Length: 149
Image 1 (tube, one colour):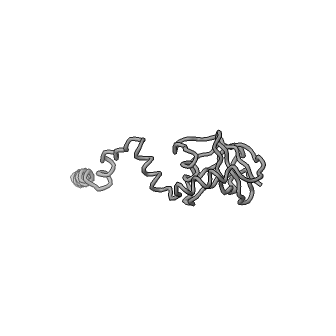
Image 2 (tube, rainbow, N blue to C red):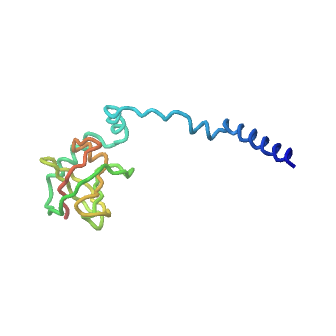
Image 3 (cartoon, rainbow, N blue to C red):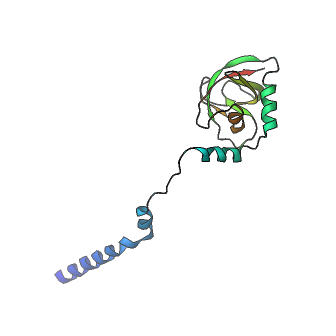
């Protein structure tokens, strides 16, 4: 009976020794992919994704100074992940889509205000086109003053 136990033990050891070459282990031991530096390459990617033209940006900036709108509040915005093009702000300051504007310092930009969730003073998302029209870096978290009807 002992020789049978030794044979089983030897077989199990040999079977496990072959496991060192399984594909899943090779993936685990592969070096991590290299991440490129943050910098100008991001700007070129942003310009490739932003389909708004310079003329559209100028028009939105000019239209931001027009119209009788009232102050809805202030919000901190991050770059929106929505694939929607154009100039928009997703914010809890509105409950239905409306035309409005955002202000950042002396810059005023006409935007579509879209209902969002979260606190009214933060958690808003601003479109890529709006970020670029306001001259923001993609990692900025601007505090915007929001105006609507």
